[in-house]
Image 1 (cartoon, one colour):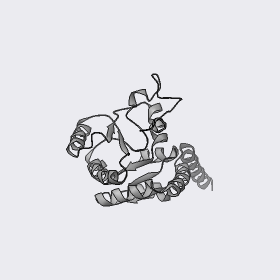
Image 2 (cartoon, one colour; image 1 turned 45 degrees about the horizontal axis):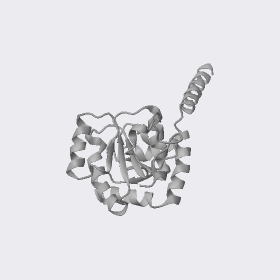
Image 3 (cartoon, rainbow, N blue to C red; image 1 turned 90 degrees about the vertical axis):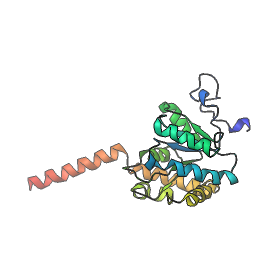
Image 4 (tube, one colour; image 1 turned 180 degrees about the horizontal axis):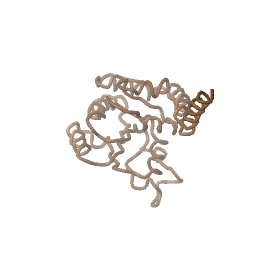
Length: 208
């Protein structure tokens, strides 16, 4: 791997740099942030990633989340699939390191089959990272045109969708632009203003 493909969040990956202990994390890589509960669908993602590697052997998959029973079980699956050198488990990371991981990733992958909201995908969009995710649950409504979707229960489709996005620079750039716009819909300031507007309308009606 060329030196230029290493992540350099500050000037270099020297001792003292926030990313120094993550020397295994090299570009290009796909990123997932969250826990490894069964509904997150990470086992199917691993199986799909094997197909992706056949066409993109230099890729890695970085999984960010506290190592617990479910992540330990996922690590066993990684060994079973012989993906040890391609899957990187970071455990918990600081906000600074997480920002660097978002900014340097190629694509954010969100294969979850059930979500309440899907905040990590919005955080990825905020950082300018294209989001590829399942079409289950509320994710299509939350992410709109800013993401590209797949059937989370179809391993081949997951792989094909990832390949479609990582091989198309113009598509990723378009996703970034839509992502920035989508995130603005969910800013705390906007939500607060909308809440105030609602209260204002209620007060007006009470005065009439």
